Length: 319
Image (cartoon, rainbow, N blue to C red; front, side):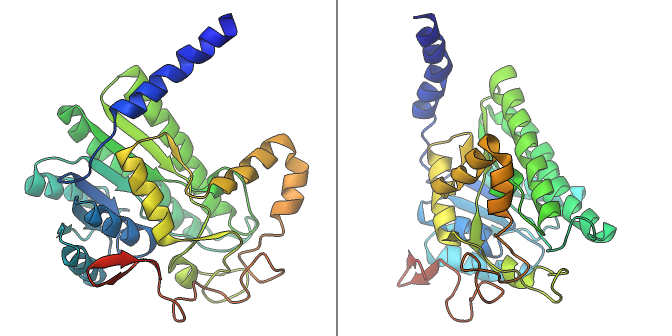
């Protein structure tokens, strides 16, 4: 009886909170970093379909303008704010610009990130520092800029993009995985501080995608094998699938967002039998094609099939 009461005490607030926090995105202001391509772009378009006002940020102003046009073609409002998340002042400027235009920020998605492929032993310091500046400091700057805004509002939702690779390691992407591990643990602590200690009204979530077909796999330096481009490994999701899971979690928040539910199996396997997990996961190679579990060719294959979603007749479609 005592154990049952304890379980009920632990899960009741989470269940009731989830019901209470259901949000309709129509008219809400959503800020997304890394919004020019891949998951960021797909998330921006999915938010547009659901009626949000979308603030899109990335370094390439020209590509952002194209995404803004796509958002507007779906009947939503877009605001372009070119931003390098490695620069604190630019991230603070992004938040200030969004506030000046819309008066509030309801959701902040700290998504901008980068990767490279190399062994831990041979990873060059400048590449490691670049990844830390982008994947770690870029997220932290976003959090620190938006928390005071949401605290004044008494509400808001922060979503930080981590990765399944922040839970379990894979060969030749250890530095990338290390940055994502930071993001997830930092996000967990932030959630505890804002939601349970301070009770600020701010919701905090971590997004943990697995392999996703995005242009990042075309552009990532493959130092291990030479040149650029990484090999996608099974199972592979489309950016639009991840975006739908992410935006669903904006409407019904949860602490951890797994777009691909079976990817939890990797985490469970590693927790239960780490030695066996190492042998299994070592066959998932992003540096080169070694078996049926990795794509034969590097990259996303976007020349053969566009990155999802695409817009046709004013509607979103998977490619």
